[in-house]
Amino acid sequence: MSIPESLIIKYPGALSWAFGDSPELADELAALVSQGIKTASCGSLASLQNEEQPPSIGSYSIILDGQGKPVCAIRLVALRLVRFCDVTEEHARKEGEGDLSLRYWQQAHQEFFQREGSFSETMELVAEEFELIEVF
Picture (cartoon, rainbow, N blue to C red):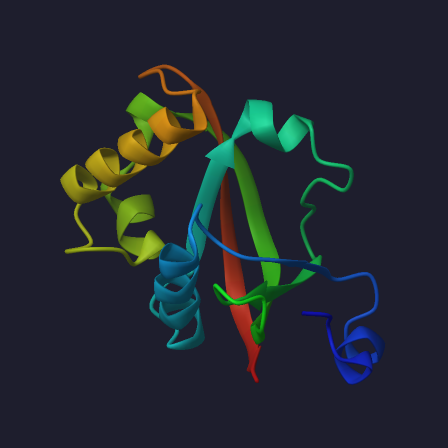
């Protein structure tokens, strides 16, 4: 699905992407963002280094659901480098998933990064915080 022209005009240069690695996870996480529950995310530094346009503070993104439909727009407000083993309870809570605990975050993200083929307790992550700008 392509992004409507009106969103391209309203958010020039915005990246469009879905969270997670399955349509179901994309739907679940996009819903958490659009409800204002999920205000943070992270990705492996290794995978982000391979992106054509890496995230930058102040940039906008259009979040897609599992079918590629735009759900909301966010603006990146903070970026920091952190090792998996050093992620805090506060960051886990901001990710908005499960019971909001660090334990849940560690389990879910270990499984995700294992599927990606990059998990290590000491792997470097790019932790992002964002604000919800608009729900479509």
